[in-house]
Length: 86
Image (tube, rainbow, N blue to C red; front, side):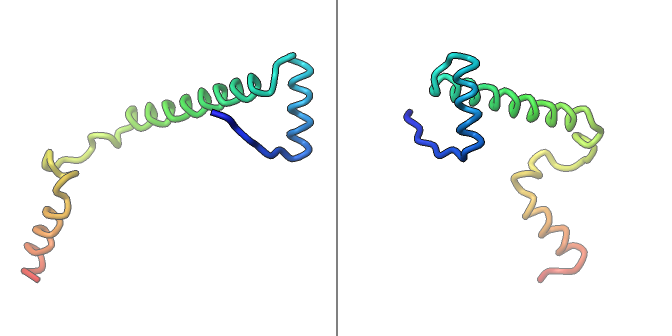
């Protein structure tokens, strides 16, 4: 995939400095930056999932196994039982 990007002056200067310091081309710097950002985001997602799964929130409720697929039907039935048929 080809990328055409516009950089402000500050980022353009940073890119030039990275090229000078690493002796890498623009394509390799962009590839490494994408890999680094991807790893950071993947790690954050994993941390959030681990925190949710280790909390008491997951699995704290009881109900029908098919609730996620039939919640509208169950809600309608519950409302009708409390308030009469609409």
